[in-house]
Image 1 (cartoon, rainbow, N blue to C red):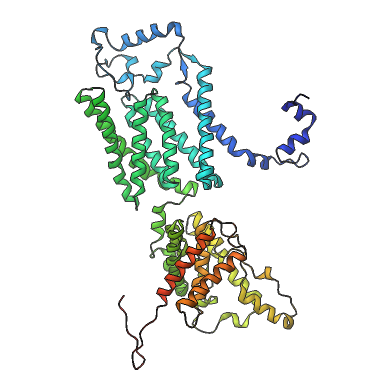
Image 2: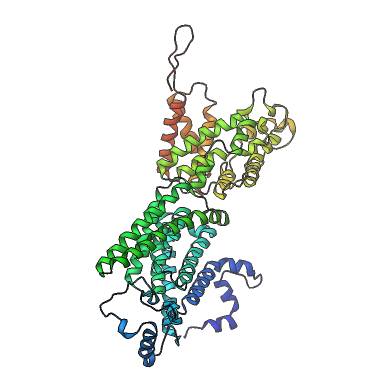
Length: 552
């Protein structure tokens, strides 16, 4: 039986077609359908725009008249007597950049791309081949990130950022290639490499740098030398930003990129035996490329952070300053919570290092995870100097007050412009755990108050931790708070307490939606125990009750 065509299936069996799309034919939701296929639409849109940008490059002259037109073009630019058959043009320079070209020749000021397509016609094979090349790249990129960087596919903003970087780099190269007097040395591929390395990571940046270098080399003439120049500058930029700790350090990346550009330019100058004057001029353009890349990176980075909600180490280091207005406000209004947050940050940062998570993100998020307590600090035990405020109110009301600090924290974080990743951790740091103390208190009073105690009424709203950093902060928060209830916090008691809390969180499924493994939990427990033992170390008691003051 011959297979039915897609048209036949749509016309005769629409239910089968809709079932294939996982959308009910009775309740067709356009937005749900677009949401399912939006990644494919974005990829197709990127391919379409790039094909349009590259269309002049993909055009070719008729074979019969190509040689005649090429000779006429060269004769219009230079008299035949001025041509030196032994002169080698830089493979990275356009045809119009020959030093001997007359200034009054209009054709001499046209870019190489214009000369190449004069009288040209669209070539269907070239367009199809280029479209296939783009499709292969997007397919390979999808395979790569799905295997090694799955968080990029999980966050739509990151995927949009990647597509925007590719598109912007190609358009920038296209614009520079049409500006008279600017060589292709000046295309700042390293700037886009550094932006991806800072906002995503070095692995994705290296992958995209290779692809962008291939595309731009096709745009400027398809030479191997161009690929090496752009790839070398991009790799140097990725290396330079890896060690940058502050935004001011990005200015030094211009020196690194310029150095890589100089090395490649001088190497090709010697290989092709260019005049030293030409090598010197090309080196100046290479240095300009490096510093232009650094300037563009510094200028564009804050906008990319804000638009796509991506958090960088530079932003995290700025937020790690304990003198920020929000942390100063926390210190003034909830000093106990401020101290608790600092201890949690120390625990979380060290544990994150042990399991390969982001220690800087863990530290900074821990500083801000309880900022919601600023609204009602007196209802939290670490800020209470007198009797508890919960003594005279119902357990259910106490639970509502405690639960509200998560919502208040999210709102305060948004009002102060904290990154989305920190806001997510604030929302997730209690997960859906039960406020055990007030739940058990309500169960004891349920006969007296004639109101059954339901565990759901004493749960935090969630969601559960979605990342390892959020899970580590949840565990550090619970461990630090519980450690203060121990009357004699010996090393053995601290170890038992840490293991019990982690086991409880694991058994109650609070860690099901993050990537922590059992091996990670073992490392975290050992780290917490070691740090808490140091915090609650014993002191030597002197006769008379005085204790020996230990050196810091």
